[in-house]
Amino acid sequence: MKKMLLTTLALAAIVVILACSNFSAVSPVNLVEAEEDSKVITVANSENADENKVLESRFLNMLNHNFVYNEAFETTDGVVNNSVIALLEFAEDGYIAENYVSDYILNMYGIEGIDYSQINPEFDYIEGYVFVLPMGYSSYNHEIKSVTLNEDGSYTVKTLVEISSHDSGAYFEECESLFVKNEASQFGFSIIYSDLGAASVAI
Image (tube, rainbow, N blue to C red):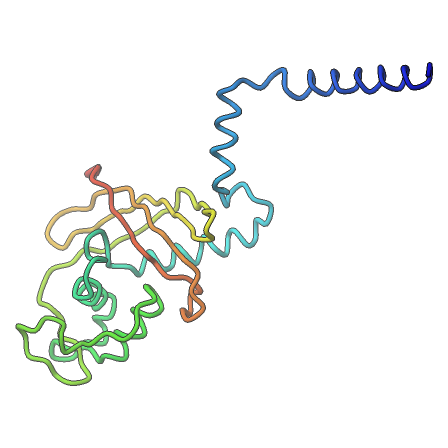
C-alpha cells in the first residue's frame, strides 16, 4: 500500500514537471499559429535540402519559360495564344507546327486534346499549324521567394518577377503560382495558375 502511494505521488510529480516545462512558455496565440502552420510545410524548412533545391530549380525553369498569366488560364485560346510566344523561334510565315505547341502545353500546363481549328477562328487555319497572333509581348524573369508544400501535394510558389515590356521599361511584380505533379510532363509538374499581383514597382 505504501509502495503504491509512493508510486502514485512520483507519477503525479513527473506529470507536474512535464506540464510546467512544456507549456508554461506557450501562449494561446502561439498555439493557434502552430496549428495553422501545420497545414503547410515550407520547403525551405524541411530536411532534404538537396531535393528542395532541385524542386526550386525546376519551378524556376518553368516559370521563366511561362507566358500564361492571370485570366489567360481561363480559356484555351488564352493558353494557346500566350504559349506560342515561347516558341517564336519555330515560327514560319506567322505559323508554328501544332506538335511543338501541343508538346509545350502538355509539359507546362498538362492540357491535351486541343482542337486548333477552333483557336482564333477569325484567322485562316492551316491544318497542322497554329497561327501566331500579331501582338507585342513581355519577357519575365522570376526570383523565388518561397516554395510551400500544400496538404494536397501541390506546391505554391511565390516569386518576384522582373517584367520587360515590349513597349515600355522594366518593372517588378509579385507572382503566385500553383504547381501539381504530372507524370506526363517532362518537368514532372504542371502549372495550374500563375497570378501576377496588382502592386508593381517601376525601375
